[in-house]
Length: 174
Image (cartoon, rainbow, N blue to C red):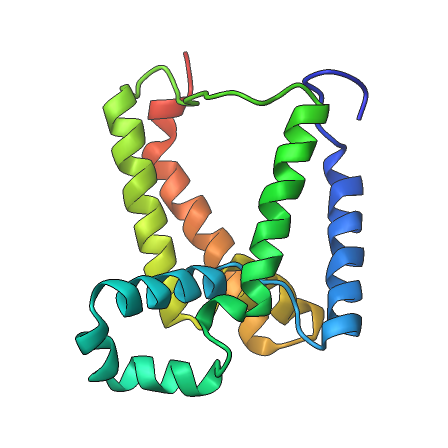
């Protein structure tokens, strides 16, 4: 990084991410992922707030059988804690800590926030249908030459390009 408020070269960042992914596969036998950590948080929340529902639902019982030490002892939870700590340190060191709402000139604050929340919910739902998020299904899948990983990455980028055409006027100034 070249100083305050500068970003890392995206090509260098991509290469470093690739090395992190390969190291993770080598050390843990698994790739990266984020949606599994959110699933652990959701399962823990249901267990704490609706224990009867948790005990009577096959999905939660299957999840508990797969995670005998508890849902929050998943390696993905610790990975995401590390990601949050690393992001905070990176933002602090580069002077980019703060609240900021990025949007185009044709977008109101409420439209941007509603769009971000809806997009996040849809992507989270899709990651469960697709058996993983961008990191887990696409990036880690492609690293091990999984056909599903390649299809997932093509779908993510294809969908982004398709939707960008419809929403481009909100972001571009003329």
